[in-house]
Image (cartoon, rainbow over all chains, first blue to last red; front, side, top):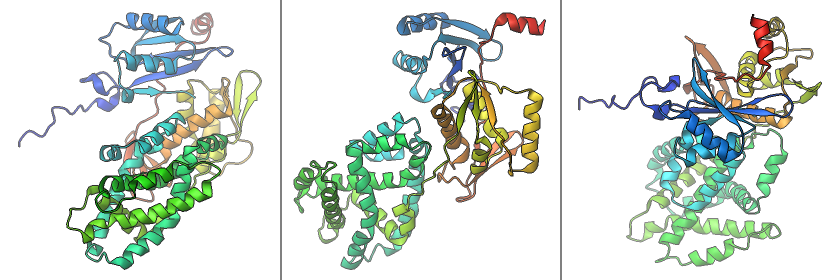
Length: 109
Length: 349
């Protein structure tokens, strides 16, 4: 009974940085307005162990949009997709098993 | 979530799904915990009065429960016809769902009761099939009839819930649960029957300023309504929308300082101007999310809360139930470059 079950506890879970188990990190899907009615969708917080280029490529093909992977000093690699792909990318991430429903957080209007 | 564990049937699930579509799944987030605590509290309450389940209190519960259940059945039958959802959409930002969790509980409970009778009344009471037939013809035209019938059913099922008393079979979980809710309703009708307090928010007045700016005219009013500092609401709005204010930073600062200095008494035309095109609905959605995260108590869903900042952490203190929990800070996260890169370079260089 000396084991207090601290093993599974991740004290950095809520800092939202990929320290320890990546299960708890949230994936933020955001939207940004560009000029006119154009928008940009960004996916931040995916586990860095994946090949982002491949994910982006698959997503681009799936949603018929363009996109890229950008490197950010604080947030690591971030996928950018053109247009409002928030629902699409959420469904995609869940479908291919990269993320669970509770892990994903949609932002924006 | 706790409810889902307990109840393995569809009606509540269906309902939840529907609500999720509205994008404001408050009760999914915090409907259940309170339910649990409430029922457990009532269980404690109900224990002393348990050994006296004579005919009289039984009838009392039936009659007392009726007004509440009438409402519930009303909801339920409306739900069949999908009217409710439409209504909700029409109302701009009424936060109806906030107050709805209580009737929701009642709703699931009634379905529960029917399920219970369907399961267990086969040996002693044999109206489970009858009931099913009755339920089916519920439509808009026959609303009143359906309501009456439903009420009858309710009284029936209430009776059925104490069915184990006379017989020597064991009580079931569902029966006990129903009993607890009945007692709860009897003891404090206000709480459970819940005049469901609608939290009607004034809709945000969102106007377009020129082609690429949006004005949020009654921003100060809404902040005051939520008892939140405009600074905090503003930070959330900007982080969510991923935009900037279209004002000089100094001006914003002055605006905010003025606001904070006067501590809530805002006057004049304190409108907020955001860069980007947003419709009223979009701003509403963001405000909803703000309210869900930073205004409603995570335990009891009361709006009577205070946001305190202690050592860089925000705490939500509920004035109604006294609970206190930490809430996440506002983080803008990654922002992609959307303006012309050449312009940025020219600015920095």
